[in-house]
Length: 298
Image 1 (cartoon, one colour):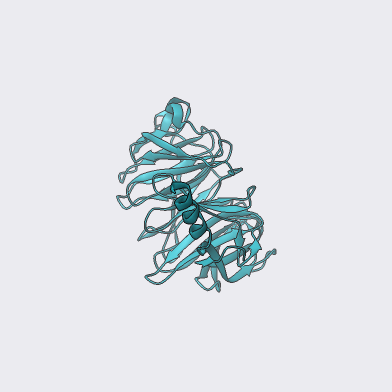
Image 2 (tube, rainbow, N blue to C red):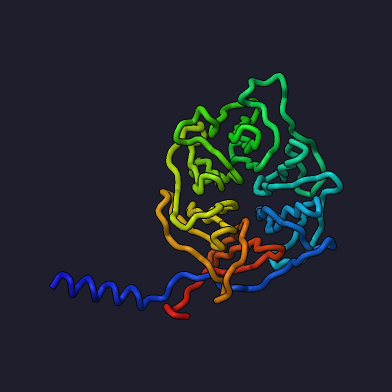
């Protein structure tokens, strides 16, 4: 009798509609003109609803509205934007990898200044190439350093406050970090392509746990929704993975409106009371999607 109940439950679950991504539109394509891309690598959405996209091959950051209409770009020869954080209420921060700095702009995209490594700081607070950056609601600036595979936290007085993820971090040691994110419950989340995992720390740099999945191949870009669910883009796995805040696997998205994704490297999430949209960098295009459902077999 118990076996029969389990079987019925399995059949009922199998017949339910499954979460899926529905395409609403796409924009971009390969090129150097406004609105086109060459190796776009990071995307973020500001509080006022603008898309900021690191167009690394064209040495610029391009800005669009939520429909994909081009607005403006910033950058120039010699720039190497690898990540952008536009969710601060005041400033925009760009990780300029080859120039070993973080550049800061105001909301109108006027240049304010830059942060480079200070040789007078303790060694653990010095950095080289900046992979990723984030700015907390408490005024803490985080950066991900490729030189020593570590995260550095600077407080709102611009003083080194914590450094973690490098060889002294034990189980939390990073080997090939790519991008960092901040959750609303004060956790630091770092994707690591070499380790095929996502590492979770608290704001003090204490390692908490790591998220793994048997299908991870090269976890790179990430985004969090308002419930702190973690979405991870993996171009080698050709998939977007979704996890609960505690790291429990929820779902994997390999298709958008039935069409396979090719090489998703990063994504950003825009939520309203009625919908959740994912903006996904896939090759040289940006795909605008909405979370929906699909019946099994479709």
